Length: 116
Image (cartoon, rainbow, N blue to C red):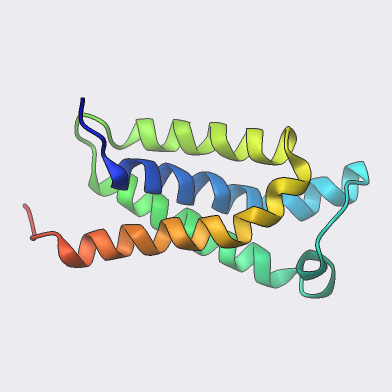
């Protein structure tokens, strides 16, 4: 069994980024608690989430192979929905996890040899 770290990082960046980008909308609508950053600087978590989501999406587009592409997007959407809908307050962890996953993807791109 092969453990593809970048696959999981891409799904994480996409899912946690989706959670960050949408959490405030759900929190305001349903009356969920929000962290200080979501209250005082609401654009920052949304922009950070969108940046991580885009990095995960671009990685999914580049890797349409055996465990890439659609699998990354489906896993990311599932993670984002569960992270926001079920865990709610755990969305604050997305502020750390999404950029870490996105940085891991970028690091993997930089360190990997170029393939056609």
